Length: 237
Image (cartoon, rainbow, N blue to C red; front, top):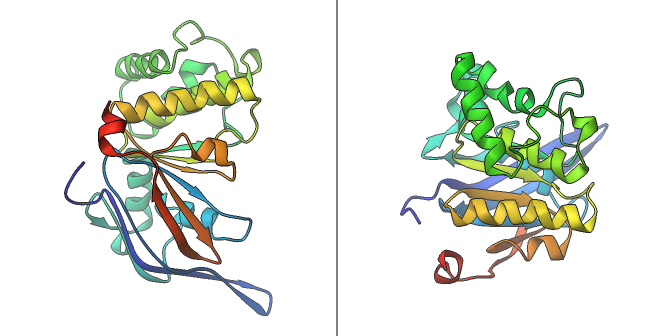
């Protein structure tokens, strides 16, 4: 675990105007995530967890407070700099997979590297390696429609990994999956974390959260609980 948190939020607030109403989504979040941590963020609808994920993913900025990602204060970045951070330092995994339907698994995983300007030969090698890492070396030329839900989500995880990001952010990654596929996907996350990958996962399911090393619970835009489920020794073992 690094001495400096990979993710550091202090006093983060965020509000939205809904007609004449003001919704205070985050009311002063202070949170640190160390490199190599596996954190599940939980909370009921309206607790602020999706807003927090947007801020962690540099898709939105705090109204007040600060957010440091790998020591970088994102408040002072221009839009193009934020886009670069999202592409290089953050791997996103969504509930709906977000795969391109007419593009095979290998090509889907290559997409972030195309945006980063990586040459085709290197793209192919890195994309194949990422698919192999999630157990899909024999499915690289399959279209999403030819894959199960669990396999599609593993393609999405490979796409998130292909840029070697500092952190993987997963928003309800098992929400559309059956029990067997959920177990497969959570096993991939567990393996990645065991290798030192930092993972922050949003979920409303206790069973999914129990697979993380730490659970942070939100209520009304505040952190109301922060529990480490496993010691560092247990995680490494």
